[in-house]
Structure formats: C-alpha cells, structure tokens
Image (cartoon, rainbow, N blue to C red; front, side, top):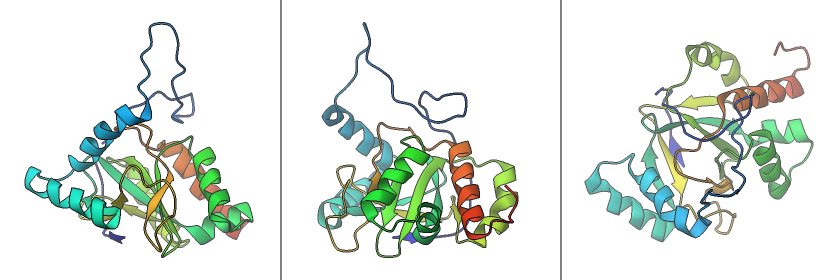
Amino acid sequence: MELDTPANARRGAGPSDALGVVRPVAAGEGVLVRPAADRRPAMEHWLLSTLPAPSRERARLEWQEHQVAMLPLGTLFSAVRIPGQLMAALTNCTETSELDAFMGQALGGGPVICDPRHLRYYALVPAGLPKRWQQAADAWRAVGVELLGLGSYLGVPHVDAAECTRAHASYWSVPMDSPATLCSLPAVARLIAAGRRSTDPGVEA
C-alpha cells in the first residue's frame, strides 16, 4: 500500500562493516542487549513519530484493524520500491519465504516491507538520498525500481507483522531490528545492479 511521488532526506543509526552493511551487536561483558519485546514499543514510537501527534492514534487504530498504517516518507526514512519479479529473476525462485530470506541476506538484515498484493518489496533507507541516486533513478525505473521520499506515503505493517498471515496485507519481509536502523545504501545499490544484470547481462554496473 503506497502513494508514490519521488523524493528525499536523513540517515539511520546502527553499527556497520566496511561496506556499510548493518551488523548486529554481539553481547559481551557490560553490554546490555534488550529483548525484542522491550524494543517493540520503541520501534512503534519511532515509526509513529513520522506523523503529527493528533494522527498517531489513527495510525495505531489502522495497525490494530488492518495490520498496516499509512506513514509519510522523507523525514525519518525513505523507501526504495523493488519489484518482486526482479528479485525472482535474480534468485531463480518464486517462493515468498525464499525471497524474504534472500532480501535479509542481501541487505544485511536491514528492514524490508513486502506488499504481496502487487509483488513489491520496499527497502527502508535513510531519508536523505545521495544526488547520484537521483541521477540513477531513470535507469532504475526501467526495471521497475522507484525511489520514494517526501510527498510519498507507504503502508507500514505493525512491527509484529513478520509473516504473510492476511490475504494481500503487507508484512515485514525483513523485520526492523531496532529504531532508526535502516538498510545500507551501498547494499541496496548493489542489489539493484545485480537485478538489472539478471534481466540484461550487457548492462553496466
């Protein structure tokens, strides 16, 4: 569920390796690792902070009744829409569970939403997208990839919706691990490049 208009704006927190891929923190002496149940309210609060205070209760109601709430993009995070057909061509598989696992591995565990109705994936990325991404947008659009930011809305599932349990309802293909942890821009760009090459082996990276 989304209303799109291309866009822009900010960066997510989280440890990363030399390639910029978000990695989990290993528990060690003196390191407090909060269980998922404790992080859940913080993630809800962070997602809802994209809305003005009067609209947040409406979004909570949408989560409760429909599993998905419409949230604006381009302030805390933006999204890259990737067609499922492109990922199926890249992986040679069509099973949802396999594609979900592939997205998690390819994007280093960064959060990804799946819209099963339209067979689309939405990688959540920092709100401020680099200028070179805007320059690449036309080439990416040719294979169905769209950059969504300011002026766009995205149907964001409740943080607990990590499986396709309702007909056509969006869910977290790769669940959000903690507030403000987003997909690495280099990882998303590499995934798009690999997808383009899978449909046209002659294309430049």
